[in-house]
Length: 436
Image: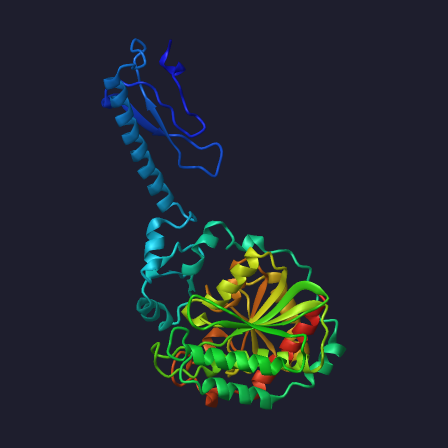
């Protein structure tokens, strides 16, 4: 009988035939016709037609020994293939590096990531104000494709605002004095770096402020979202008649010229935090009952690579939360041109176009457009997890505050009338978003 009739194990990707010598053993890759197993190795042990299947002990042992060696070699080839495959499961090396405290960071959408220490992350990226994402805790989610903007659901946003009467009645209750009080309280914390000595102090302040802003409405639930570091994010939820969610957000951590130095973070980002706090306070005090559920997010770890928001949005993606819109605000108090800037990259275009229609209606400031690059703030986390997001800021990149990430980012650099305009816009957006 021909050698081709010898026993095979086709499903597992192997063919084993009797052998004469190891020199006659060949391996060759097989194109996979049934993904997702693209790295199979087909092994054939060739036997001349005249040689029968080995039946004595010696030849059977020889056969088994070489077969085991071949299987081990193929396993190494498979491991190497998976190791180098973009978007593959975390490799053993990845897991070891993560366990050693190294961080995997990306500086562009196509960047596979670079492992570095926390110190290197600060020196090479944070201090140079380079946008990046720290994906260390979410390698697995990227591997399974949960990190793709292609998942973003098509939401039919209105062509413009249609609930001005309702929104303006609420906007009239926004107070600049509240913005000033909260901003001073947050900026007075010496440093709010997510791994710093004041991480827990700033988290406690943030939780207390959110609870206070929401206190007049018992329907609002305030909770902390824990991360792998000691600075939790804070979420306030105002339930609607629908479980679909509309989110406004800001990060509350800060960083200075070093991870332990003075970092008041007044514009970056106490100014964004107080905008979201005042919107929460106004809606809570009015007993506002939305159609869609409204959430107010206060993220930690933004300066470390969008860590807090990334954890939250990957959690929402894993749990199939129906997020209709996310509007993030990072820096709202320094604007030489006295504008509200809407950024147009790494966002959802349809949502951003709708947001652009709201700025001149719900604020007295003109609209300006710009781009900020990869990973510049927490809207990018929502976008990469598959949720529609928009980003609103106080100024174009070229004219943004020169004081951020330093001890000079103080309350004295802020314009509170400008911050109040952001608060008005935010309240208007929440009312409109309630009806999506």
